Length: 425
Image 1 (cartoon, helix red, strand yellow):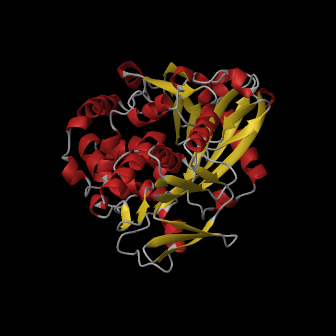
Image 2: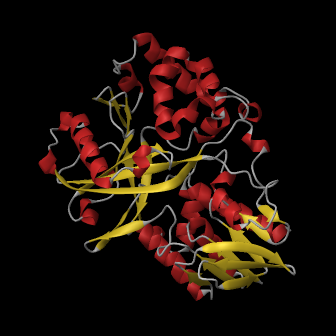
């Protein structure tokens, strides 16, 4: 069977590998010149550096399973990681009950309520009903209005912007338990470049084909086949097609096919991301939210708590990010202006470490238009089917991840579910 895979991110490459190993004639069409989707990278010296931060959690069964299937498990290394909090430009450790009790930005009563609510949260709320309950309403019922305004809302606004009040509470509840403030995390030696290269090699060994710089311009149904045309007017005939490109992009290339009843585009946030390479280590915390600190970025991820400085030419790597609409002023702002503003803020919020401009070796700006979906209330009833045209066209996108968290692991989960739908038709 001839099967086309649209998109060379981890969803598409995983599907291509599984199908090719089963003996199908598989072709991957990727618009960019580099495989990986959000798992992209750039060359620095002798190493390839991830453009966006990634890590592996102990519960990432699908991702760990793929790594094992690729023979890369021996290249994983695990580290215990910690969390901090920068609140009103002051740093606080945030790794357990004692740290919470010392968090002076909240009253003692609020701290005690926060601790009690955090313990009870996994047990409160019926998942079947929380799909229709706004996150603001659910968290306010547990923690009260004050803690919603002073802690939870700014924390989640960092990722979801103005949509935060009306996100389904189920989306938050589903995230509970995946990780904690003190967590074991892993990184694959060689990064995402090694994973993507290994996937591509294994697909080739199974006689699959990968075409890069091959942007799809149209998809048509003809005589029981799917005809995919690229932007160079090359046409490819397939028995079945799996699309992993974002739903809005898929709808554009399906202009001649009525897909409105099955494909409902979900609005989403893009991200502006800065990678700071410093000559000295930072706080030692993997994840540090930044709240009420007059910064444009809202979070700090110190990848060097996982990845040795040798990978970065002897430097220490810290990512800062802001999730934002692809139509925002920040997303379209000149990169040098972003660097200047964010460097100033980066130094200011790390003044407790004595960081100065001379300690920053380089700053790299990356952005992508669609990362985090903004799911509407009741999304479970609106979530698209994996099967778009019965027996012919399938889709596996971030629109299918809900209520799970957007991650490499959940991407592999929907890749698996899409393949099951294809095989069971």
